[in-house]
Amino acid sequence: MRRNIPSTQALACFEVAARHESYTRAAQELSLTQSAVSRQIQALEEFLGVALFRRTRHGVVLTPAGAHYGRQVARWLQGLERDTLDVMAHQGQGGTLSLAAVPTFATRWLIPRLPQLAQQHPDIVVHIETQTRPFLFADAPFDAALYAGTAEQVANWPGITAQLLMHEDVVPVCSPRLLEAAAQRGLGRAYQPVAPQVLTELPLLQQSTRPYGWRQWFEAMGVDAPHALDGPRYELFSMLAVAATCGMGVALIPPLLIEAELARGELVVACNRPLQGERGYYLVRPAHTQSPVLAAFSRWLQEAAQGH
Image 1: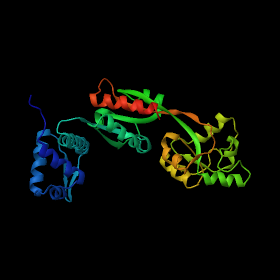
Image 2: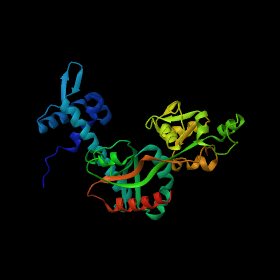
Image 3: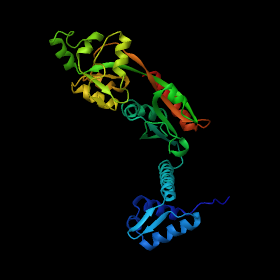
Image 4: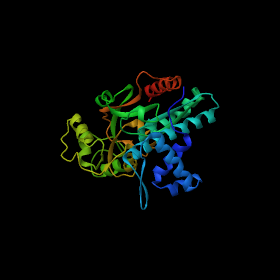
C-alpha cells in the first residue's frame, strides 16, 4: 500500500531548519546548499498544502502549523533513528525496551539491578530516559514507564495498564554525626535511633514534591511538631540523601533508594518508625499491548520488587 507521506530527505531538511529557524544554519548542518534546503522545504509545503515558514526580511520564522509539525517530525525522526540503531546493534536478535522513569528510582534502585536482568535475559537491552509526569504513549517514544504516584493519579492516567511494584515507605535518616551531636545535647544516645519527639529538636530536610511529608509523619507518630514544615527544600530524593549525608538534617527517604549509603554507614536510621506513604512505584504500559520483551521485563521487575 502506498503511504501518503513526504520523502525522508524533505522531512530531515525541515526538521533541522525548524530547529534553527534558519535555512542557512540547516544547510551548514546538513552539508547542503541553502538553495537545496529551500527546494526541499518548498516541495514539502507543496505536498502538505500548508505554509511551514513565513519569509521575512531577516530570514524565515515558523508558522504555527510549522512549529507543530516540526515537533511531530522531530519525534518521528528520533524514533526512527532509535529503532534503526536497535536493529543494527542486535542484528534482529533479542529486543530493546525504551523506558521512561523517575530519576532517583531509576538511578538508585533499577540500574544497580540491571546486571541481574542481563544474566536472566541477555538479549534484552533497556534504554532509560527521565519522565516524572503522566504522558500519552501515542505521543512518546516509550514502551513503558516507571512511575511514582498515588493510586488515584494512576487511575486517572488514560489508556494504560499499571502494575504496582511497591509502596513508598519512608523512614527518617541522617548522618551518624548528627545523632552524635544530638547525644551531646542530651537528645538520645550516640549512634542510636531516637524517639519520634526528639526529631522535633533536629533540623529537618523537606522535599518540595512532598511538602507535608514531615507533618504527616509526626501526626502518624502522635507527636506535636510546630516546625514540621521548616527547613530547606529539595526536589529529588537523591538531593535529600546528599544533604542528609553531609549532616544538614534529617530526611524522610525510602530505604530502597539509599541502600548504598546505609550499607556504607554514611546514613543511619534516625528513628525506626517507618511510614507508608500514599505513593507507590508502578510499571505503566499502554493498555491492551505488551510485547514479549516487555512481558519478560515485567516478570523480572515484579520479582526484583518483591525482594527489595
